[in-house]
Amino acid sequence: MLECILNVSEGRDPVVLDALREAGGGDLLDRHVDPHHHRTVLTTVGEDAARRIARVAVERIDLRTHDGVHPRLGAVDVVPFVALDGSTVADAAAARDRFTTWIGATLGVPAFCYGEDGELPTLPEVRRRAFVDLAPDAGPEAPHPTAGAVAVGCRPPLVAYNLWLVEPDLDRARAVASAVRGDGIRALGLAVGDRAQVSMNLVDPFRVGPAEAYDRVAAEVAVAGAELVGLVPRRVLEAIAPERWTALDLAEDRTVEARLGR
Image 1 (cartoon, helix red, strand yellow):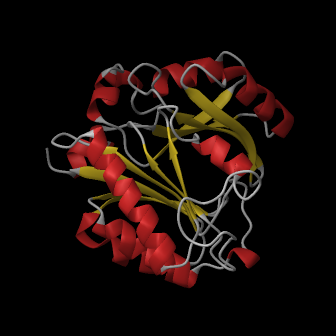
Image 2: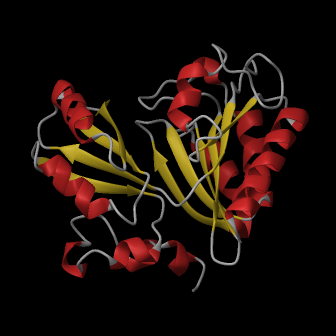
Image 3: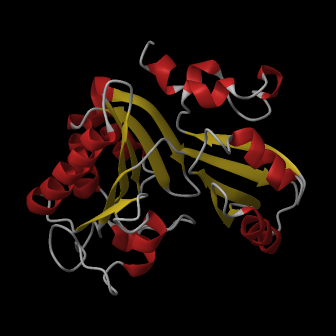
């Protein structure tokens, strides 16, 4: 079984959000909507839901009128496939390649493959280099006029995790993000509404999980609260003392396994 976590550039229009949710159907495990980032993260299983959601996003989202604090390449911004129990990294890579070919040929959206094994550019590299010195792996050579482009990946489990700062100081958030970045953490300092946030991807969550990330940020600046984006593997949760779960915005029912009924 494969997990697919689509990051879609829409977080405000309830009609479009409902259409994306409906497209996920019974394969949708979780939906995290963020109006400030103007972004929705949809966690699905299998490959079919990813295509259904992508089709709706390309049809309904126009990047020419889009604004939001999160970096983005396209309406369907990032589509990573993750191997769950019973599947392999090779299965996830094959799903990545099939989706890349499909969205380029069927929807006319340029697609860039990314990975973490050194054979492909990483996601940050794709964001920096797309259409500059990096050509799409499928689809047109130029961005889709309304839907931009998409980065499609095969990766290990990752945890998306945001921390809100007590003080609404963007410069401080950026400095803290720079201080904690690396060693399993990718981080940005963002102004989110009238607050400041350190937005992180924990790319090695079995080693550097939410508790470690929280403590690293808290060592630099006062933290007002935490926000888990999407789901975590149960093994990540079980590595953290249960008495910390609430403050870290974690819970048993927010694991991939719980949503799969395992």
